[in-house]
Amino acid sequence: MMEKRFLPIDLDIGKILEGLWFLGATSVRILDEDFRVTLLKEAGDYVYEPEEELVGSGDRLVKQQVSSFRGFPDGSRYVIMLRNSFQDLLELRLAELRSYPFETSFGFDSMALQRNQGGSIGITPHKDGLSYINLVCVFVVDGRGRFYVCSNRSGRGAREIDASPGNVILMRAPGLFGPEDNRPFHFVTDIKETRYTFGLRQKRKP
Image 1 (cartoon, rainbow, N blue to C red):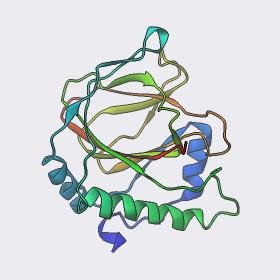
Image 2: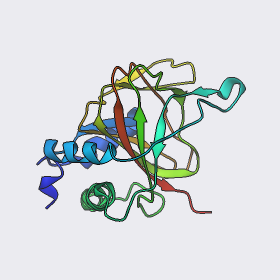
Image 3: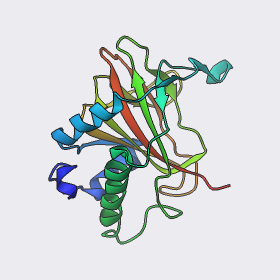
Image 4: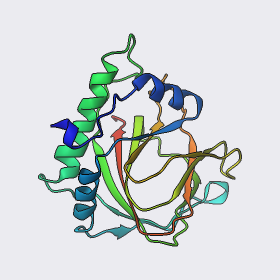
């Protein structure tokens, strides 16, 4: 039943890996429109907790305006339809490759819905935490905002990645193409309306 969740596209894993190698992030339009609307309705039922607006200190200070929800019930479509089906799809495509691109076995075990209010600052340039490995995937469920990768915390060399509703943004993490820290700096800005995103990550084992 995967075709009722994702667009009938041939997910080009080679092209995705190429974008991750050269830019650190790439984007694919993937969500079926009816499924996206269903996900949006579910997202509106949850209660979101504001994140700290200032994270870090000194030259590592990150500013953000976002609220999050993580307590998904067992029957959530985000769990049984989006996460599970997308991981199955990725694993099918990865099996077509001559060599496995990850240092360790791949599997999403961390999920979060996030909501930005219209007019919020989004989040300033930063890297995802080192507690996550292999691959970061962020589905844009609804709302407009501009997503960029860049070369440092000042936003130098910013390159925009398509963050349209229905797209999934993929970012590399340590464990993809080797164990080294290859996380891209990235930021979100120009949020003009309420924006919902769903993030999938893999936790690093102790």
